[in-house]
Image (spheres, rainbow over the protein chains, first blue to last red):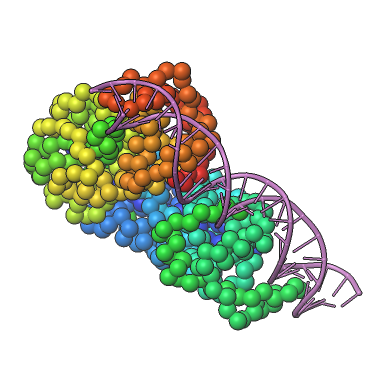
Length: 228
Length: 228
DNA sequence: GCAAAAGTGTTGTTACTACACCCATGA
DNA sequence: TCATGGGTGTAGTAACAACACTTTTGC
């Protein structure tokens, strides 16, 4: 019906990182071009005419932040006519999970700077990016209730307390250690190794666990019922 | 980064209808322009430069099928470069739920025909629309597990067996009547009226129920745990 | 009176919640 | 020996699954 259309298509990503010291954080870039020059924003950009949406977001992440990420999932599409002050841009957003320590951040092409920001301490953002982060965070909190979580966010081997801290952080409330362990081990996607945690200060060292990838991803697909 | 971009933005909708005789069906239009002329397709079309995505899909539904629908939710965005043979079009898709009997279908502007097709009997479709319907159907089956369902699909007053049939149809398996009733009445979003069903053939007439809108939508928002 | 659909309770089993003390280590 | 964090079991309660017969109506 519309004879010609003048709308641009962008992709943006909310990349969550987790460390037990820092908690849950989000990867942001500092814009070096107007509008919102020098403001923090989500990594992302316009989609190329010949590339898929997934390729576009991976490319943008690589260019703007230096990270490459294998777990990325579509979140929502934002399309209010005035969300970009220049011209109409709709944004297809993704969210992903990574281990921050596994990457060196470097603001390569389009960005003046890149950094992790704790989810509780996000600065003023460009465009409607605050709303996008909010949506992604809600989705993550929701998702944790019917999918296992942790594989993409923890080291290969980790003490059980790391997983517990992760859940505490994402759910933002305390959980009962014994019940949590019963539940998690009941699902069977964790394997206990014979190794013990290297000590970092005082305290009894914990046994190290790892994910059984096959079972983990099957449960991720089939869904679980998770209440703690 | 891309200096100019040549991508069009469309919206498409998977509108589910339910009747107890026909089961679950999907609203389709017959295209009257190439490509895929005379093929069945989802209602939808290009987004206007100044309208929101939601306005666009409501407008297209009105134009192409004659229905207006108040429950519509974003589903997913499809953006493979080759999904439209003419040029690059990304589609932001929605899904909605209606009572088919409440509308007169009429193929107004862009469509040669409009019709309901049973979900088990969908014809060959244009573009990647079969995949979109699949995605919508999966979402519906999933959603039913943590949100109440029925308000948008049933008459104002209905015998309990109607709700039961709806769940049986959507879940595509039999459910235990007594346990189902216990569960549903436990949530408290149903109200029993004093009226009895008008008879349609033999059988004991059932009491009529209605939804308590306030409780229904609160539970829809908060989520429920549903297992039958 | 028979076919069709509605209505209704109980029991066994499983899953969840709440809760507190001892153990291994480093300093 | 003290501070820190890891590890473990039980009992009461609530939710779920399985299951069959009686009632009301039309024909």
